[in-house]
Length: 284
Image (cartoon, rainbow, N blue to C red; front, side):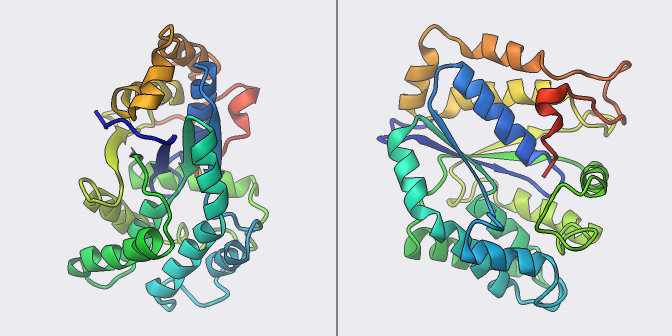
């Protein structure tokens, strides 16, 4: 259990592309609000919301070169700069609410850019360099909790393809962005995320297995309940006290799960069908 904290609990939701970060950021927000918590949500990068976010969009569209032709240090600074531009809003949120949820945060930069290095032996020092910039120089708050959504690459690729076919992302001018277009890169990204477990840069690390034993994706309602239970057990004291009032969390989790419909025969290897209130949440 984490110690008492004077500000809101800052939760980073992380995972490779197609792991469901957007979906579970939104489900966590709904669950927390149903439990009576005040919540603010952020999504990084902000693409059209900041100068650096616009540059990130250009990078992911290949304007600065291919994945292997653009230095990871350059890309890391773009993503970090986008968060720096949001710093004032983040600090304000942390003083006003109980829970701040970030769909991608600093751990994403550590994993995705170190995965582009030619040698895994270089990962730790590179991650330390990026963390020093974001936390020590830019003074971004460290997450209290990192929820890592672990999804097999094959399942993530299927989600990416479905999302891109729907053309939901206005910043993208190509079929897939620079990162998600390279399946081998996604495999290395998954390894890079796993290397962050226990690091000093991610707060309390919670591993969420999002696939069934046979490889199919788990029902989102089940994952949402697990996330809520894990967060209740490990979040700072302020959030625990608020959640503990009347113990609404379990009921909220059941209510939330009831808004998601599992396909007949289970979810193993089949796409999930959701009701309208969650149908607009593409995996990310």
